[in-house]
Length: 310
Ligand SMILES: *[C@@H]1O[C@H](CO)[C@@H](O)[C@H](O)[C@H]1NC(C)=O
Ligand SMILES: *[C@@H]1O[C@H](CO)[C@@H](O)[C@H](O)[C@H]1NC(C)=O
Ligand SMILES: *[C@@H]1O[C@H](CO)[C@@H](O)[C@H](O)[C@H]1NC(C)=O
Ligand SMILES: [Zn+2]
Ligand SMILES: [Zn+2]
Image (tube, rainbow, N blue to C red):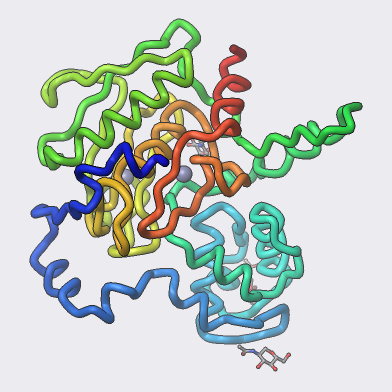
């Protein structure tokens, strides 16, 4: 149904001129297009505690990046020893993604872990909100399971209650044709919450700032080239939201490309204070496939209402 909204322009793939020449060269070979920084995980199929395969240190880095792991001893962070800490991190990941927590790198785990995703960690500063809320709600007296899998940042970071109107601007290099999908995403959050949004000129101050960046861009969270991490945003009241300029972006569902509006809906959720949801259909679910489009879900709206008490 949502396809209709985008119909007139749904097959336009945006080729961004801001891509570096090297990026163009790499993209021209079809086999390269399909490779992703997460592909190494496929080589770990069936691995479990006690294994010692050369990609295991990469899996440790992956799980650390998304908040599942933190070694006190840096030697263990960079070795290929499948130890207790790694097993425990994999089990936590599996629970968050509704996979049987075996601690084994099985098919389902590989399939989730290799899905392109948002760069914001699932577990921010060591607290796993993707699960705690679940337990709280299940203990209710009702027979109906009203399980809310939305999450917030530590300390429930949010905009002050008086701040319901937020302004946003695009950095000067932002492609013109990518602005409308972002504006539509703001409009959807505007309709569904107590927030209102307005765009201001690139040279004005604003609460939120949106830009395309590639690789290391100075905020401590470097992008990783085509595939892998697609975008990220910061918790309130930071206001920054970045797309990875190395991805192939689209307006609407296009095979092999990522929908600008879908990613904007997700990242705006972070800008407002939502963390990742364990509900697959929620916009705040961390992963998004190429060619996939998504909309706001009840779970996302419930999350914002719970955070702001409205
Ligand atoms: C993991 O270890 C088992 C033995 O426990 C071995 O059979 C298997 O081949 C190893 N897997 C990999 C990917 O190295
Ligand atoms: C880190 O682990 C290595 C290997 O097990 C060990 O030799 C070293 O003493 C440990 N370092 C610290 C600071 O515990
Ligand atoms: C996580 O902890 C670091 C260091 O204490 C802090 O700077 C950062 O703001 C925290 N992030 C969130 C989202 O709470
Ligand atoms: Zn995210
Ligand atoms: Zn960034």
